[in-house]
Length: 312
Image (cartoon, rainbow, N blue to C red):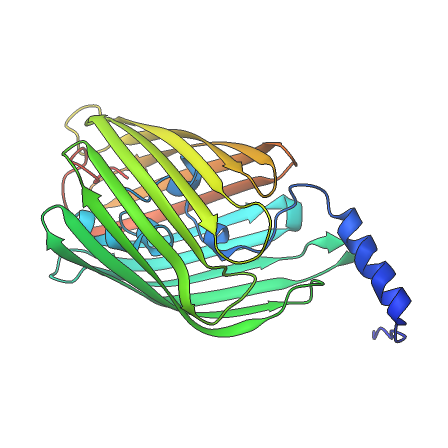
């Protein structure tokens, strides 16, 4: 079956474009690789892990975080967002046991938003390498280099393919406090899906089983309001001999550009050889977006559960 379209006049094209914008409800999910590629641990605590983003979390939030612990981990995750029928898939292999900690990764995000009564398509593939370096026992730096391929037939969005990179720093101020600073998509191929942005975060661990985090992120591309602010708590249950733990997480996120507020939560099972994490996020103001995501991890050598940064 084929579809034929008549050329639109300038007036007709303008009317269609205006109509498409009017029917997009506030808070509708939009293409944003900074959000689509996040895992369940980040989602559950309001995207606030730049101060302690170990393993796969470091790929998107702060590449310097790969050096915060010592482990070999393989992780795969899948998520779904009903608002735009989005399927989200991530896969990574991270090794922080050597002199130069790093990760290989692949991410996919595909969605079918309905705009002006028509179903559109977006797909984004990214793959690349994250590397970190310890400058001192308390200071780490890192960078992520990725190849991206973004395709979209959504009005106002253009496809892109090429390389881009992130940079980050993690600092252990004390045994209880970490800070993280990041720059995203700083140089290379530009795309609406992968905007330039900067972020900062603080992680506070008052006790081995309790972690509090707060993050903020600002886009550097485009006009208008920007700012995404989130925070969360994790309580790590570690009964028995401490070989298995159960993290419980909750968070809140506010997006200034959308005028939207999200609440999130999640739980997991963390053992010495494998881990499972599940999270859900719901937009409670400014829209009705919901995201559900889960991931499964398999470990090589790692520190025991319950030590700093091991339980995430």
